[in-house]
Amino acid sequence: MVRIDPQDPTPPFEQIRAQIVAGSLDGSLPAGTRIPTVRGLAAELEVAAGTVAKAYRRLEEDGIIETRGRSGSVIAASGDSSRQQIELLTRELVTRARQLGVTDAQVRDTLEATLTQV
Image 1 (cartoon, rainbow, N blue to C red):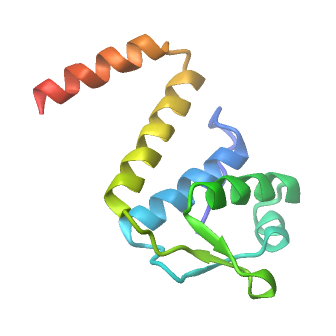
Image 2: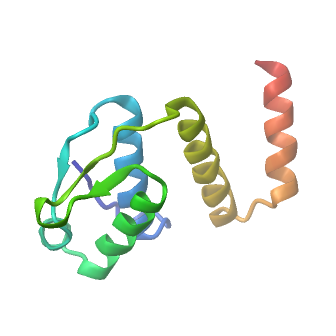
Image 3: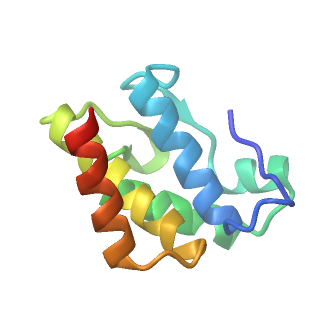
């Protein structure tokens, strides 16, 4: 379900988060799909449990997953899915652009230029 690329400069928690978001958006992780426990995924990926927990917290804040106590976490059924998807994609764009050293102004300019071209 999730892989960590040690060559990618993106922090492991963000790689985990981004891959689960992508799966929820493209349908490979449909609503209701149970995701591994924090400890289970951490062991599988050979990362600290805190790394997975941080990714899961962000996913829950973004409404991508729901935690159901002892029943574990599942992919959430999204309410306004198109708006949610755009917000998540935009957040990912900004995060990745900043990691690459791109300024917010450059991101805005590029986005505006792309909107007029498409």
